[in-house]
Length: 120
Image 1 (spheres, helix red, strand yellow):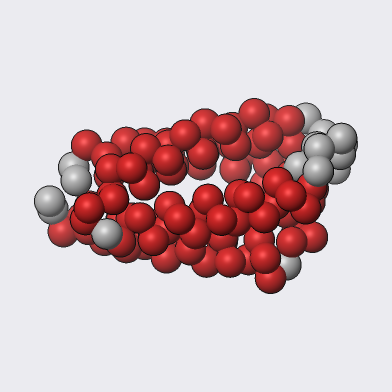
Image 2 (cartoon, helix red, strand yellow; image 1 turned 30 degrees about the vertical axis):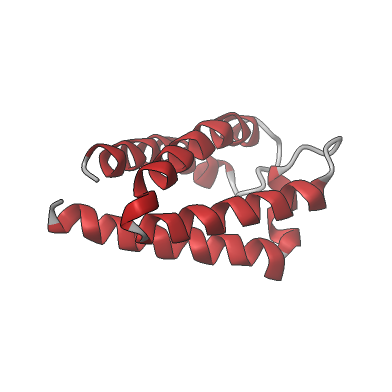
């Protein structure tokens, strides 16, 4: 494993753990990303638990492949939400410009998950 991949694992492990915790600390921040007919609080908490698990999994050598696969799948699941957000009148991410910027970042995250998986 290269130092680069280790740094990425640590960075994304911290990011996912932090974001997962934020789903519990400030759940309303994430409500705009969840379509209205769905049970927002339940989905928010489930995603929080998943993100915390991925974050911790990226730190552990024995679970890094599962965590990287889960990271990839989660980013795939989030992709339609970011596309939906882009076409909303008022994007949840803040502005049309931010929604446009966020979409390609999703593909970067998919690639990072792939790199972690292939190099761990």
